[in-house]
Image (cartoon, rainbow, N blue to C red; front, side, top):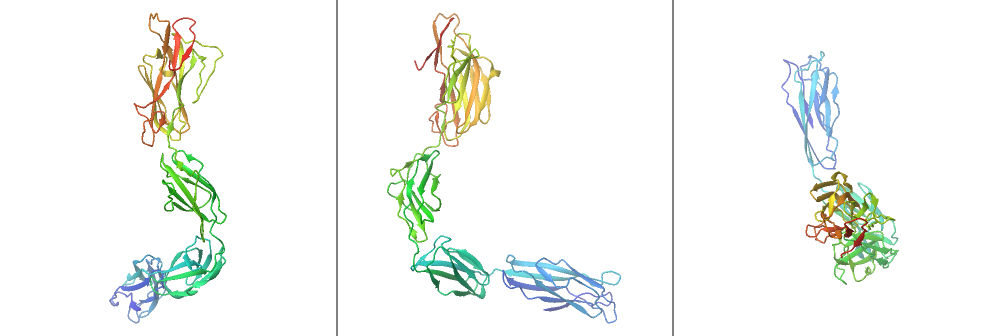
Length: 497
């Protein structure tokens, strides 16, 4: 396409019009042909030369053969070629306006500058040629797992892969060819239909089928050593087995009905273990396994125990938490705690009116679930105990700790006590007895109440649960302590007298 255009001088120029160029192409197709414009000096013969000219605003997708030049005598011109340089952009219409400016010998814009060339470039969607690769073993169409055989496809674009895949390339009059390059399968017999095929229409497809006449290997033998072990707390069940020598993967079945595996539950499993982390609490499951390779599957083998596998609920467990007397008047008091601490004294220590006892509340989460909002309320009312010094309270463990005192009621908070972690509250209390008591034998018992919440809904089971409430707290008791309201009072401990 030839467009005569541009530039003139005052009093001598001809009227000039801006020029427009139009291009079109298919996405990822052939580039469109170039088009030309002519940069001209339209002055009459004997007029002045255009000394220089310059093109600007050229987009990245457009190539321009000349972007600047020197002298253009009157009534002559310079051809400039325009051509898009890519077809890989998204389908749409792209536009640009390229400016041309001419200068005289004094560096002043000549009359007629600036001239414009409008460029429009439409890219349309192109259909693709889909290349499929299948395989047949002994006449049966199969899609074995990747890696069982290899091949190379060549044509307008070349690529290599293995297994049954689909590839898309732009349509072309050229042919694609396929060549078998081996792999773990060695009984290759040819192609179906022909080795060389063409795809010349938008949206067309080619299907190559590799033919194998005999299975070089049998389906895998049955997996052995199928042992579920035991449920993992928080509803998980771990399955394990001994590898089948010929298996490339395994298929697992899960059912809540004995003898009815149903449809495959997990496919393409590799390795020799699998953890089921979707099992529901308090549910019995049955599991089966099959070895799989490109040539078939083994028999279905059930995991033991054949009576089913019981999931283990996910709970916080504070059953070992307790409250103990650890010291009397600063001396070690005999006590034990399977939860957190213990202590012994070689000398018996009497507890009597006026003594100061040190108490420790030990909070131990031996479960598998974090306990949140852990709170202990200890009411000393009616226990013959009075808090000795509020500032002497010591808290340890938990994600956050705080204590408050309201009369005889002590409140301790620990935030979150994670699974397998401990916390404690330690404080001193003074032993009191009724004034002018004639009673020879006195006793006290003190029970703190622990409550918490979890990420799972409450089931109100107290110390071992997924949460507690005011009606089902975890009770932590010192037990009954008997003492004499007098001198030389021996210490005795009663359990649920």
